[in-house]
Length: 214
Image (tube, rainbow, N blue to C red; front, side, top):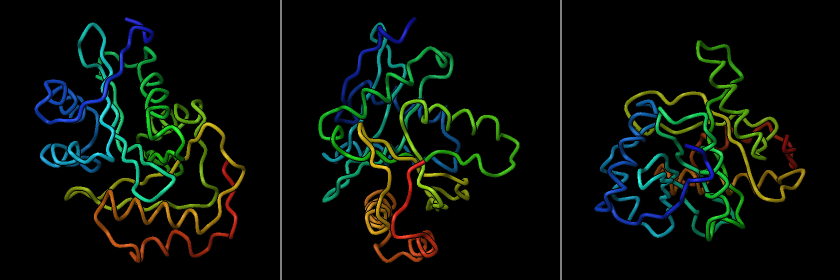
């Protein structure tokens, strides 16, 4: 199988047979500390600002992406993306990303992606470096100096994450208050937190007015 045979489609209902396959890949691919319950995915798919995309080969679901286009914002969060384990390394993930960022209302937005941080010495650092390299090859950049704090989505402590940014034409810098608006949208619309969550101030307190994208 090759990635040029991949077809993309949007699903908008938990009753779609493709949704069950999406959930299967989701559970296989993401650790508990990063996973939301399947019941929550079922409610998310009903929200029009969410894009649930599946990649198929020979009518079989082989990957998916879940993106939230923030309300009243110029940004979106690529919440989850994964390829079924036995088909990784065949270019399907690249196709998923490229098709997701150009899909409908996501195409003109800044696309944010939470990626496992490779800044610390961990047992899986090699895998973390590989994941970040994957996104960087596709044009994503990192916000210089930002120590991202991901709120918990389960009873497990969230892993250390970095925040990457993509757009077809990225500026060289982003203003601190622009970043604040993105973080607030993420905390409110994804994690159910408040705009004045203390973690947002903690992330921004020592950053300059203009932040490089590197």
